[in-house]
Length: 274
Image (tube, rainbow, N blue to C red):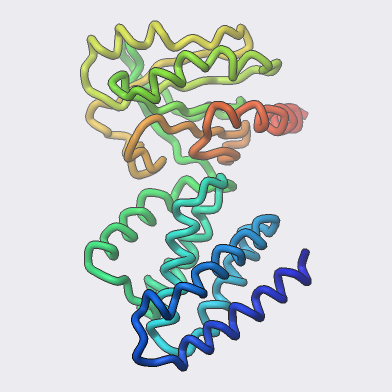
């Protein structure tokens, strides 16, 4: 696999250099072949750790000798990783941004693209996998506040809005997704709206169906905890998993992928107790 990746990297670097020497052609023609190889390049890097993906992306971008090709390659890689379906790969996009866009070595295509990239990085930087989960002080239904996530227990942070159709669908699937949990787990159901009556009606529907899973309800109508920035909650639903020591082990989770994460969460729970 490593040999194949290096061979592909060599081809990409050569192609990038060749494109740098081309002149007078439309960008769409210049970069069509490169885009296809860039996709193959990203697919070949799937087994790598994020740090290694960043190194190889940096090497490829650096190999582009003219500014137009370098910009195209850097922005294509940035867009690929920030929209990746693979959990955790958005970290690669943020590191590309830090290394190339933030340092002004690569310019965005427009002011709108610059703003869009800035917002993505600002909203995602503090909740990457492997980072300490930001603490939130949230309001409880009957008054008072509590800190989430819970230290010493595996915690799921579920941000939702009753008017969100996907949120309603996921709430119905929660019991099935949590049915195999056989260790203490906290589910923090965090309402992102401001309508207390709508919240009261909807939270009755949020059930785990599993006595090992404790469902706790919260809201923050004034957004005093800054949860939007801390956990990139710019839409709903959003689901995060935090291990007992306070490290994020899952972000942008889908319920159908949760069962794959639960054995890891259980092992970390048992290790924490020991």
